[in-house]
Image 1 (cartoon, rainbow, N blue to C red):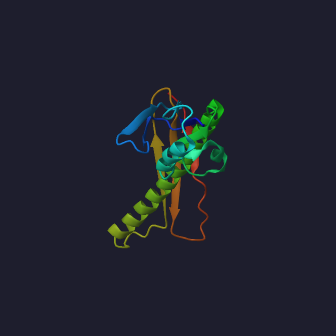
Image 2 (spheres, rainbow, N blue to C red):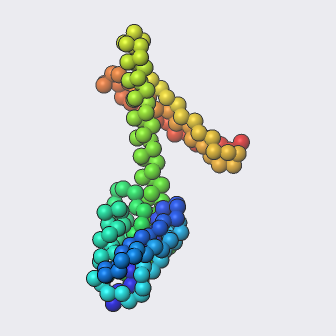
Image 3 (cartoon, one colour):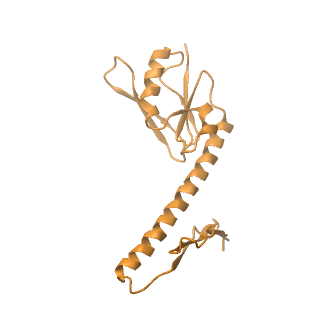
Length: 172
C-alpha cells in the first residue's frame, strides 16, 4: 500500500483540501512554503490516493518527475512512497521565479502597448506617436535591489524592438 507525499513549491502556505471516498466531510492539511506532508494516512489504498490526486490535478498538482518538463508555474507536486527531496522543491521554486519574471515582463509590454494605444485614441491621432518608451522603476527598500527596466513600443513594424534593458538598482 502506497504513501502519498505532497510538497508545496510556492512561497505561500497551501491548504491541501480533499475528500475521502465514502466520507461526508472534507479533510484539510496545511503545507508550509517549501514543505511537504504525508496525505491522509501512510499505507493507504492506491484507489483512495488516486481519487485525492484526481481532485487536485485540474488545479495544478503534478508528479515530481514532471517538474523538469513543465513550462507553467509549479505550485504543488506529489510523489509516492518516498519523501520529495529538498533539491527538487528548490528546483521548482527557482523554476517558478523564472516563470513569474517572464509573465511580469509580458504584462509590462502589454501595459506599454495599451498606453501607446490610449494616447493615440485620446488625441484622436493629432499627436502621432511613432514610439513610446516606458521606464519602470521599483525600489524595494534600502537593502533589497529594485528593478529599473525600459519597454519600447513602436508603430513601425520594421523597427526592431530591442530587448528591454534590465538593470538592477543598487541598494542605497
